[in-house]
Length: 457
Image (cartoon, rainbow, N blue to C red; front, side, top):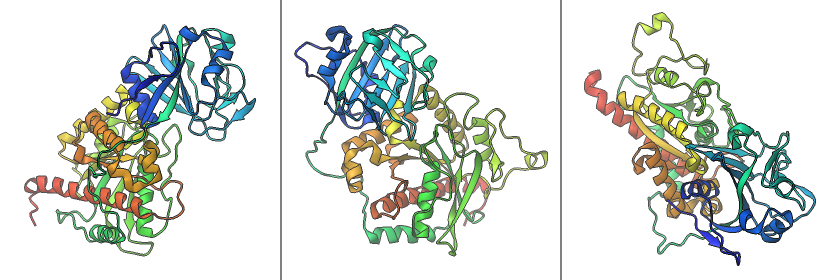
């Protein structure tokens, strides 16, 4: 994993209090960065004037506060502190909190200012004030910019034991040779070839007309966006048939099966993407593991509305007969946001592990779709073709492989269409390559069960 370095820029000898594990999690959110310790309250004091002397006009900064209840929490802003007396719009701003085994990450709400830039101590959303009134304390005031729960953010312990501010600097990727760590050819010919192979794909089992692919992942990871992206490629322009977005809770509340055609009036394509409610770490929220078991075995009908408080119960008539192979799931895809891998909580990781154990017991093929690679790495954002020469993206692939317990070869980085108005070649090739792998993995599953099903070709 790429590790952040802490570089001392003050004439004082500054020692970072930030544990290595938490530093790596934050740098996983921020990308390939170096953290330079600008300010430490126990050394410089709790005066706002000294904070500004040390931290003004330093570019993006990360504030990290500590209390005696074991919480490490704070906020990131990409806009300089400058004592401008203005409201600051910063879509990249976020708050975070860590405590024994759990982590949370709160983005600024759309349409709200991230902070007020005055000559006092930093505030986020004019809700969370650090070192309030030049004291080692945090102060919360109601507001709408961030969805803050003071109990989960800092355990309602407002007294600070330390406060640090780091300059966040993008670290240039140094590569001895620009040799790709995975070979993917991005040409118009390759895109056409992939589309043709997918159009003509025939599942290995003659009893199955369409491969059923189940998308599972945390809220906002990009499950619905992947469907929209694949549909866009075969439609010939960007579409948005499945509801997608970045809400804090799942926008998908039904089990949806999305068959696709080759163009608006074209023939049916040989796969169905199945979309589910997003996973959430707390119990009683998001998709229930029992619901996933019912989906895998083909019992849940299209448009079934999930109830996190009560798992799906098939009616007696359907429960008495096993679902046909055509109705079952043939490949499971875990959709993981590349920018949040390092912030994945222990609870969510355990939930995913429980799902994987269930999928393994049924012998169903599994693959990981790592989304938002452009947001995770500035180099990739600038040029998507650099994806497979980015050492940072490679480290994220290795990290998600380790966390989910899947081989590196089963982790496929992609960029979904989100803000674009036109299709883009590199984006298409990555998405189509991922879809082709899903169809191949489904055939591996069919190959394994063929003797059991007694349906040799």
